[in-house]
Each structure stands twice: as C-alpha cells, then as structure tokens.
Amino acid sequence: MIGRLGPAVAALVVLAASGPAHAVPAEPVPQVMAALGDSISSGFNSCGWYVSCPSRSWSAGDNAAVDSHYTRMLRLGPPLKGHNRNFAVPGSTSADLMGQVRQAVEAKAGYVTVLIGAQDACKRTESEMTPVAVYRSRIDAALAALRAGVPQARVFLAGIPDLRRLWQVGRESPLARTFWTVGRICQSMLARPASDKRADVERRARVRERVIAYNREAARACALMGPSCRSDGGAVFSYPFTIGHLSKWDYFHPNAAGQRALAERTFARGFDWTGPALTTLP
Image (cartoon, rainbow, N blue to C red; front, side):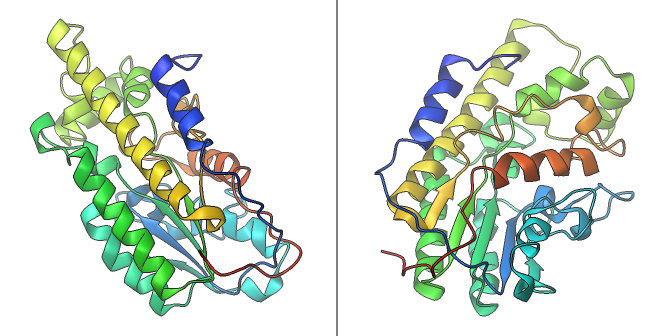
C-alpha cells in the first residue's frame, strides 16, 4: 500500500466501521488502564538497544514526547495517575493474549488496549503463520474473558500495521536490509528484501493479506461486543509511516516518533472520556 488504500484495505476500513450502530455516552476516565499485546505496545527498541521502553508505549506510556493514551486521558482524569499497567510482552502472539487478559482483570482495568498479531504473521516461513480462524478464536476468547472479568471496562483494538509497507520504506536502506537479514526479522515478509522476483512479490502479498484478515476478524469480534469495544477502523494499517518512524536498532519496531503516530491515530478512534458513567457490557 503506497499513497492510497487498495480495494482490500478499503474493504477492511468499511468493515471495521460497519458494525451495529450503538450510542456510546461520554464517561469519566477510569482509574486503571492496561496495555496488552506484543513488542509494539511494550515500546521495544524505542529508547535503547533491544529493551522494552514502556514509558514510550503508544498506549500506557508516560513519556511526554509520545503523548500516549494514558497521558491524554490523564489530562482529563487525574485519578488515573500512576495506574497505567503495561502487560504487553515482546514476541507475544495471539496465543499469549489470554494470559495478559488475566492480568488486566486482576488489575481491575477500566480501559484495555489490545494490539496483537504482528508476531502471528512474522514467522520464519509462511506456513508457520497463525491460521485466521485460530487467530479469531483467540480474540473472541480474550474479549469474552474481559467481559466476564471486568464487565465495566472499555476495550480498544488497534490494528496490526501494514508489514508490506515496512518492507517498502526500508528496502532501499542497506542498514535496514542488513538488520532484517542478519537478525532474521519477520522473514515471512522481509526475507530477500532486495528481490523483485515473482515468488517474493507474491509471498509478500500473501503475508499482507493475512494481516488484513487478522484485522478484519478482530474488528468483527469487537463489533459483536457492542459499544464497549472499539476497533481503529483501519487507521493503523493505512497509516503512511516512513523509515523515520522506525527504530534504528532494528528498522522494524516504532521509535518514539512512530509510537506518537500510533497514539494519535488510535486515540482519535477511541472513546469520549468525559460525561456520565459507562454502562455494563452487553
């Protein structure tokens, strides 16, 4: 995807926004929030060499330059101060999400963000990618557990970034290609990054389609939860990020600028955190 949305992405955006219409009243900022997911939400490589940097997480970080969901909400609801939990773990796939959900429930989180799936697609080979049906079943189970454990909570599902765009913005960089190859990073998409052979072009397209399918199924699962769950409507996947948004320690994870862009794109698609108290999940 370069410049404009292709048909598949346009369909994803429509789908994400096409669930049943629900009136979502404004509400007070909750007292506890939790970030669930993988290395993106843990802020990995955004402040140091191969370390998580939770302070720079787009979701629960407290770094002013990133201006995460947490810091934006904190300006509206001071009781949230210091209650930003980050349970995201680098390398996590959808198989690990339930364990993080249990931590969010134990913390009594009133707001939960989820960004999971890049590692389901980023495998050594295509055949190792998580099947779409399995990914969907894990998302369904996680959302059901949140509804049962913290029925008052609001849940925000952020989309998986476009991995093919990652290849597009970094393929001309010798440093990026070196990191991807030596580090064996996301080989399902980034193997042989300089190649334009038909087999490699088609492989990248299939991996991208898998990510689109994950995002589509997550949006559908969220829509079934009613007004207490929102997805980003394709905002993350369609964002035209550049190599300047990537960590120079691996040219894969978002740096501080990338984390800020994620925060801006997703917060605008989230909840209105002022007004009457929220209602129980359906």
